[in-house]
Length: 349
Ligand code: GLV
Ligand code: MG
Image (cartoon, rainbow, N blue to C red; front, side, top):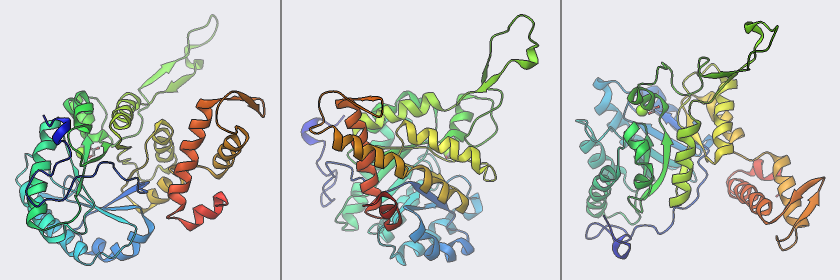
């Protein structure tokens, strides 16, 4: 365990100073691509300016025979990377795989200056983060990097969920967490066979009534991910890092994807993964506050003066706490608008 005294010390001689605070950078969508696929690599220059984060995926969904081609393809992408505000991330293979070590060693030494965040799958506890942290420090020192590469963990095992707080607090490199519903479902022995989203069997049913047929009793589908997402949001908030919903695998069901993303947004997440270009616009829409919400929030802040006391606006009670909520919305709108001129004009900034 690193004590408060040395928590922010570099872990290797010559490694860059750890950050004291995780900077908020727009990351409404983490757009996944397979760098082993030449056609996808050719599209990178066109897609990069349309997303907040582009992620070269080396782990699941890349076939075993393509693992090395994916790593080499990402090095090629990184060498040609000139995409300004857009962040370049990677998802490396898991710590117990035969590829992890070469993934990290190659990427940091070849394109470490271009990589913002390394996403680590199947993180179980703080020891996994400590291992990656130390290795990254060694590699950063060797590559003479002048800023630290951050770490993002996927929450996708029962043990990872049980240890979520210690994972968030394991290193100053921790940038955020994503929910990994597919692996998590398998690890927990949930009986779903999909990537994220709901399930029609997970429901509550209206009580029976005299004279009413059972088939008339309304059913309400419930959110399978509410518990995990809520734990994740609280753990991230506690440690000052960022929570994300992960993947939604039914690409054709854009409506349910939007709903799932919005649940995550309302609970406190800052973004989600996009696995297909149609999900980029969904995430952009959902994870940017609505202009009407921003307008309302600005009005509450203005009318509430110094932000203390109680008042009524359009029949709704406002006080110090509603003013704080309004600041959350307006601050997010300003941070996103700084990168997105269309959004800025929709907010009237
Ligand atoms: C993502 O990696 C997932 O398992 O859902
Ligand atoms: Mg997974």
